[in-house]
Structure formats: C-alpha cells, structure tokens
Length: 118
Image (tube, rainbow, N blue to C red; front, side, top):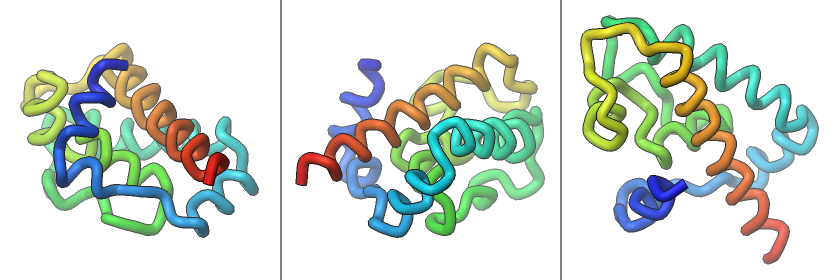
C-alpha cells in the first residue's frame, strides 16, 4: 500500500509505534480478533456521516487499533479526508470501511515484523 509509505514520511504519523504490551495483546488475542475490534471501532466511531466528537473520538493509547488509527490517519474524519480523500459529512461505505480496516491491519502486521526482527 503506497499510502503506508507516504504516511511514513510524516514525522507525526511515523512517531506511532506499538509498545510491547500492545504486541503481547495482539499475540494473545490473534489478528482476527484485532480485525474484529477494528471493524467495531470503525463502524461505530468513524463511519457515521457525523460524529459528535470528531477529532477526539480515538484515544492515543489503550488498544493497538487506536495506535494504528493515528499512524494511518484513520483516527477521525478530518484526517481521513486529508490523507485518504473520503469526504466528511457522508456515511462511509462498506468498501471504504474495509479499506480503512485493511490499512490498520497492514500497519499492525508491519509493526509486528519490525518487532520480530529486533
């Protein structure tokens, strides 16, 4: 995904890394469960046309998906519009949601690869 390369050039986006407790959580739950968590978070917190607390709905820590959302600019509709060109004010389609979820999981997989090679 070319967008992961572009995001890696952003000082802010590239500053996000999974911590050992996040990696332990992923290893304990498995990537399929993490994907389900991402689906749930995206459908409830990001996909609606209007999110009451847009820009503040994704914590900076507490779950590997939250970290991945900030790293991939899928944390709020403003960032999604800027980086992924999905318009604000409209419900995200299932295809758009799948794109976001796939991007989050790809970023997590890359983080796992990096940590395995250390």
